[in-house]
Structures are given as C-alpha cells and as structure tokens.
Image (cartoon, rainbow, N blue to C red):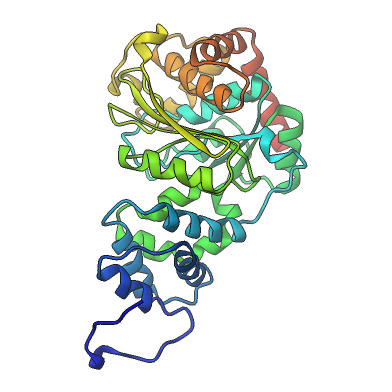
Length: 353
C-alpha cells in the first residue's frame, strides 16, 4: 500500500501497527480481505493501539463496508468466538440475531425465535443487552430464563426445548479489546454488523435485520461468501430491523451462495397494518409482559401479528415453510396450540435447573 505522507510523520512499525491500513483508507482505498483480516487480528488480540483502532473504525464508518472487509473481519471474529459445541449440524441450526440500532419496538426477534423453536426449528439465539435496557438478554431474564447459564446448560436448553440463548458477552472474549474504543466513539461501527455474523453455535441459517437499508445487500453477499445455508437479511421501509407490518420490507435472501432480492408486503399477507408507535413498550416489565402474552396466546393485537410475520421468516429460512403465507399460518397454529407457552416454561426450567 503506497505511502504519500511526508517522512517526518514516519515512525517505526510496531506489532499490531494499523498505520498501513489507515493510510490506505485515508487515500480512499478499501481493504482487501487479507488486509481486513490482518487489521482485525491486531484489534482483537489487543496489539493495536486504541487510537489506531478508533481511527480504523471511524474511517470504515464513513461508508458501507465492502464485502471483502466484512468477510475478513467476520472471519477473525469467528476464529476467536468461544464456541458452543452442540452436535447439531450447522445446516439445522437457526439464529434470529440482528444488528439493533433501529427504532426500538419490543423484542420481536426473541419472541419469533421461541415460536420457531416450538414449530420444530433448532434455534441458537445469539443476543446481548441493549442500550435501552430492554434487549433480548434483559427480556429473557425478566421472563425467568438464566441468560448467564454455562455451556452445559445452554446445550441442555437446546436439546430439551429446541432453543438456547447464547449471551454475546460470554462468547466473544476477544471483543473486549475493542469495547472501550466502541464506547468512546458513540456511533455504530462495523462491529454492530459483525456480531450477528458470528453465531457461537455456528448456525448455518439466520434471519438478520439490519439498521439501515444500505447494509442489506452487502451483508447478504457476506453471508453467501461465509457459506450460509440460508439467510434472510432485511430492513423495512418504515425503518425497522424487523419484518414490519406497517410497510414493505426489503429482503436479500441467501441460498446456496446465490442472493435474490424482493419485498415482503404485509398487506398482501392479510396482516393488519400498525405503526411503530403501536409496537413500542414503556419499560422492561411491559416488554416482558408483551412477549409472555404473545407466547401464551392472550395477546391478539399488532404485537402478535409482527411476531407471526417474523416467525414466518424464521420458518422460511429454516426451510420449514415454503412461503411467508404458510409460515404465518404455522406460527399462528403453534401459538394457539399452547406449544409456545410450553416452550417458554421448559426453557425457564431447563436454564435454572
């Protein structure tokens, strides 16, 4: 990578030196996969200086990262993840983790994960706490699940209930090196995209909402390059990182290395329209009560409808439903049979036994 900077700014190279990559980015270049991998190896081993880490993350945040940059950095994250060995083949495991960072509605992907598990999908739900205090970890905890459970208990949950919660903070020890820098920057970085690309159980199937439409296609292409069996990457036209019931959702559908783009229109699926405000919650207790109501069948309003749509997406990604229409029907039957309420009760029991 060429150096056009005056020599008085030169300094000796040191282990984890990100300067060559920074100069290349400053000149308007992008990082090839091997350079992205080397840069993130330096970040995730803690050998890079915090100032250099911040500069690299900020420069990458000025634009959409390239697929090479995403594949290289995600490869490092995957190498360093503290894995959950399940014995379940990757092609049978599904994750519903998205990026967060969109307007906050209740925990749709968490509710959808439990519905999908109740319909027979093996779900390794990757998640975290949220800036709002109402992330998947907080809501599952409020419902009685031990989100800090160790590997053996996660495995028991998966075997007995079809769903395990993989709490990100316990599975990404190498991410700690970048955490002070990410907190100091105060804006989303490439790490917000990398977390959901790094399922600790190696799930080969995923529904992954992203916080801006510009990320839909590059993240889908990244899933394809990383070998996903099936992945739906999406952002709704009303701004959600969920399949919306208030507007069409832009989807990039990854299947066997190929990517197809389309829109899912909730009106065409017979779902009642609702605004983002209709789906927001006041606090953690409200969020937990809403999820419990959806799963026990007592909640019949828009929160149920958006859960049915996102559970349908999970069933499509798991190849358990041919279409969103049939997925919605299967999700509704699964809730109304009492199966989802039983799954939640069993998950609480299995995680705390």
